[in-house]
Image 1 (cartoon, rainbow, N blue to C red):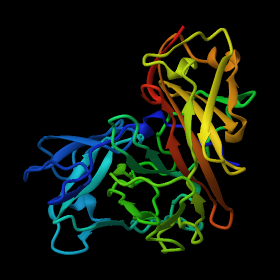
Image 2: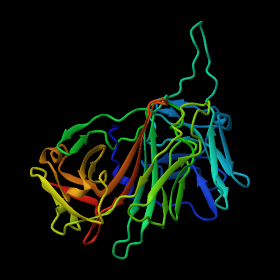
Image 3: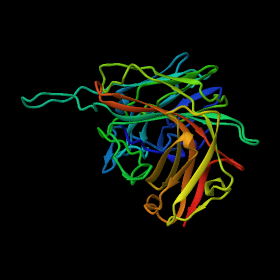
Length: 381
């Protein structure tokens, strides 16, 4: 079983693309090239800067890009012609070094496609010449459902992340796992190339469908839908480039269907149900909840804390109604501010050894409190 990275920012709803223009990548909206940066969830910001030819390199990667430096990329739109296509410096914090990548826009909400074709290897000597591409790794595809609570509308957020390495095991404390790098999204694998990705990811259920498109750097920005799903709805996953494309790495072709979990509500007396929670690290933290309906046997309630790159993730049987976060796990974090989230979870794993990928498919439903949803910032004492 893969030890997943429990990335707290998953519950943050990021603005999607407008109806008139679908923009993929981090390019500026004008005609000038842009240097780029991308946050941990793939949301981008950009600022214009002059870039020259030749993909000039520094100790941390390239500092400038010209058109020829993006010759391995092809950016197209399902309908119409791509506009504002630029070769820019990608400084996303998911990559150990910056590199050159394309950005572009598709008008009218048309779907985009960006294909990266690795250049042919340069071989010397008499040894075997093989292209340096990653062979599998780990990933997680998550559909997070925020049910309507109070005046807040319901939303569903699709996010995905793939890496060329598997996650570390972490330290176990009862039902919890402390991982010093559980929130670390820096990609492993070949430096200077996009993150591995299976193309467009589509998640569908009865009356519901949403998709996420990888930018040219291989990263997925979360996509938000105003449609929510009922507990038990069968959620299907699909992507556009299954199997061996000849470009490596390739992804499994048979993906699972996962029932949406039931809705959990924290007890009003729980510390995590407070509007501004404060948790004492030196004592065990009890958590209790009620479920709307009868949870399936493999449903869980998850409590996650994140502080910097470190996470504490606790997984409890949803039908138990109670769980305890051990003080030992909380003491692995420092005093001060931390992020937290509580949600019900139904998860399936595709451990596709034939292609080297271990991928988790999660359907999550945010838990409620008397004042809203059980996520945000708390104080560890």
